[in-house]
Length: 396
Image 1 (cartoon, rainbow, N blue to C red):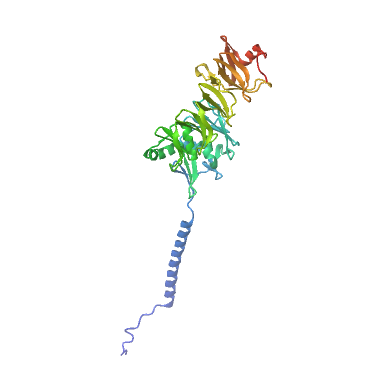
Image 2: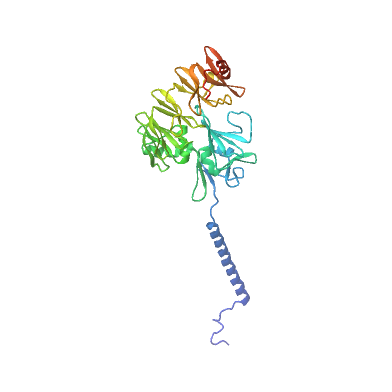
């Protein structure tokens, strides 16, 4: 008999085995939670995978687009940017997969496999090709040409940079114009409309106009060169600007605004890139200036070079190549209504401006022929020189 009711209030004891199972279950749950938490931490601690953004749009990094981590396919990039891509050399209509050129409106960019040398050309001008040297060769991979990412600014005049997440951002000039137009307008500026000048944006320089005068801003819209020039032309080759002031005088300044060539000419323009010559004008006469500012000729000519005439298949003609071992390269000039030739290296006269009505070049079957017209007769330059002989020619 349980008088003290001891059995009534005695707890029912759990078998020892069940306690162990319960403890193990709890431990396994806690361990699982810990593992999942740690895995989540590791995932969050890992840096995000870098991406390429082209004009602000994320572009999938595929083997076809990026090679060896540092090259990008010219064809793929052109398609995304809206540029035209051709597997050949410019103005050579045969297919050549080792070469290509890319067309962005009037600007042409040419590339060749295993070469650091590229060329640029501006259509609808008389300027010759501009040749530049990249830091890396153009490479071929899977039958595609690739350019090093670090060379993009120079190669295609696109703005490219890595952000703090190591993402590569590539912007075309057109996209940069869209992005900055409204901000510039709010500050009283109008962005340059000239394709050549727009190339400066690839280097972080914005040529803009305010109250009828031009200057240069950086990407933060801070003035690098104040708006004080009546005209401005970006010379990418020399990293400078050809400018004119409100008095109509032309000169050259650096990209920081310092004076390179004083503003004293009535006109100044690039004449030739290969030899880096400028055509300067004063009192309606022309002369040739070297890149160091010294004069190759006096300012005495009616014109430098012969203008192109597509209707008559006449090419723009400036420099005549060597005519013989004794006669070096010459430049076409016009004086007193007649054409002649001066030596490219010295500026001295080779063929006086006293007889020729025309001196030009034409292209026949892929070859350039130099022609003259005088006294209503047309012949090749070499034929004319043979007839004229050497008695009146300066061969020194």
